Amino acid sequence: MKEKFVSLVEQYKDEIIQTASEMIQINSQSTQEGDLAQYVMKKMKDLGYDEVVVDAYGSVFGTVKGTGGGSSVMLNCHLDVVDEGDVSKWKYPPYSGTIAEGRIWGRGASDTKGTFAIQIYTPIMLKRAGLLPKGDIVVAGVVCEEIAGFGAMMQAKDNFKLTDYAIVGEATENDLAIGCRGRFCAVVTITGKSCHASIPHMGKNPFDFLGKFLVELKTVEMGKDELFGSSTMSVTNIASSEKGTNIIPNEVKVYIDYRQSSSDTEEIALAKIQKVIDRCKIEGITVDLKPLYFPLTTYTGFKGEGYQGEPPFSVNADEPYVQLCKKILEDIMGRTIQTKTWGFATDTGHYAAKGVKCIGYSPAEIRLCHTTEDSIDINMMAEGTLGYLALAHVLANEEK
Image 1 (cartoon, rainbow, N blue to C red):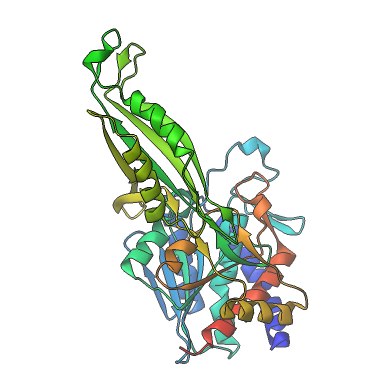
Image 2: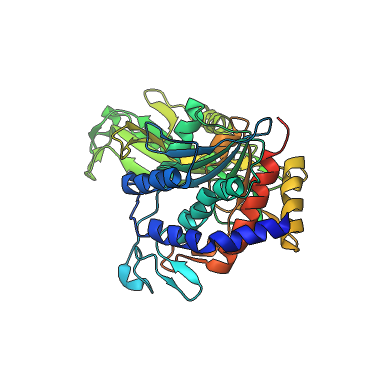
């Protein structure tokens, strides 16, 4: 099987490189992914996918149907990229997709267009080589990952095209990622009664509550797990309803960044903060606590609310499917494959919460994501293509 996979990689290497370059040339910042979505749909249809659909939010899903009886597998990347920043700091123009120095350069090369090009070709390579597995393979390009994980969040909420397994293409350097801390933003709204600062007894100052609250917040016991250690919680912003310095404000908003280990779900974390609020009660002052959502309109015109963060995800390295993935990669590559964690939030938490068995795999390098050196190594892409063929084939042949 290894020889067949190696031959396929060599056969399709140039097409995959060209596809990655062309996708990088399309500026697809969050909520502006329409042109890239059209490109991906055409590419999938031209390659011969059995089904290509776009959901209401703009995410693209291509399906290659298996022979029957196997587990379904999703190969997942996101369509959007972050802003290019200072163009003068780029070695090659950020939307050039330049192929040079053994790499493909440009915004999104490492996060995640280089990997997505591999994913798009993976099921077609297997099908054309007569190696189609039993289970269906769904290739998903989701929208608005960079600003809210919105595409994956809505896909999971709608139970749309969810699969037994998911391989998420965030950067792993061709190792396997088995977890990421989650993140959400808690908003504490403290409402008192505004008055002139010269007569404070006529009002109810929200800052009186805030002072007690900030001190008590430090006493919260953070959740821990073996993979990530302790969760962290940081007050990152405070906003007053009044701009003047001689007014006791009517309202103060406090924003708390909560980085979650797997033991601190949003529900648990909010309950911990609520207990602090309850301990700090002051008569005449009301306090509201909720996670931060913000208005978002996708390129399809859908108006929704983006979630400021993504849920945590972790799986034990000894889990059978993780060990299966590790073994097949080591057999194919002839080297040790590491299991490690992502240092940033990913879409895996949305899928794992729905029972999808997730893992991360990509030839991209974490150190290059969101930088002006954004690029992907072509030799690592070749190895990553070999890995994707092996992973998709073995997981989709698992019995249901």
